[in-house]
Image 1: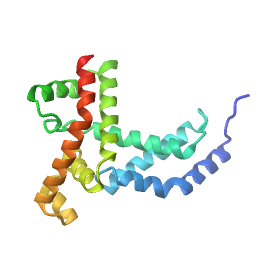
Image 2 (image 1 turned 90 degrees about the vertical axis):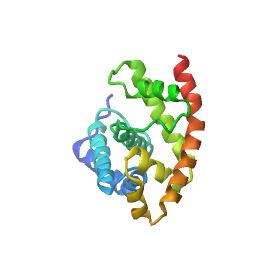
Image 3 (image 1 turned 90 degrees about the horizontal axis):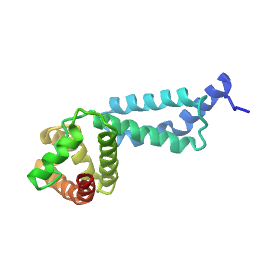
Image 4 (image 1 turned 180 degrees about the vertical axis):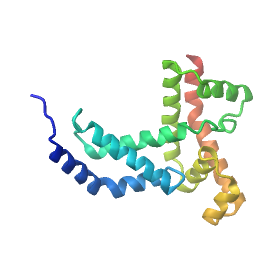
Length: 187
C-alpha cells in the first residue's frame, strides 16, 4: 500500500520541519554564501523542494535530507559563478589550463558533469578542513569575487592579513585537490 501524506498532514510536517530546522539551516547556509539575501533564497528553495517531494518519496531523516539539499543548493550557486579563478589552484601552468578546460567547458557530457560534481564536492570538503578565517577569505575572494578591499572593510582586518590567510587556504586546497587532478587527467 502506498503511503500518501494527506494535505493537512503534509502542511503539519512542513511547518514542524521549519520550526525544528529553520534557524539552524539558515545559519548553516549563511556561513557558506555571500549575503543574507542569498542565504534566504537558498533556504526558500530548500523549503520548496521539501514541499514538492513530500508526497512522492519518503524522507526518513528529515534533518539530514534538508542539510543535504541545502548543501547541494549552495554548491549549485557557486557552480554558476563560472569565473572561478583556478590559476591559484595548481602551480604548473599547463596543469591549470587542462583543469580549466575540463571544468569550465560549456559541453555537458556525463563525464564532464561527473568531474565537475566531483571537483566541487572535494573542494567544499577541503574548505571545511580550513580554519574559519581562511575559509571565509577564500570563499569571498575566489568564489564570490569580492575584492580584498571590500573584505577588509567588512571584517576590519588588514588587507595583508587577508592575503596571507587566502595564501594558506590556497596551499591547503592545492595539496588536497592535486590528487583529484591526477585522477581526472589520467582517465
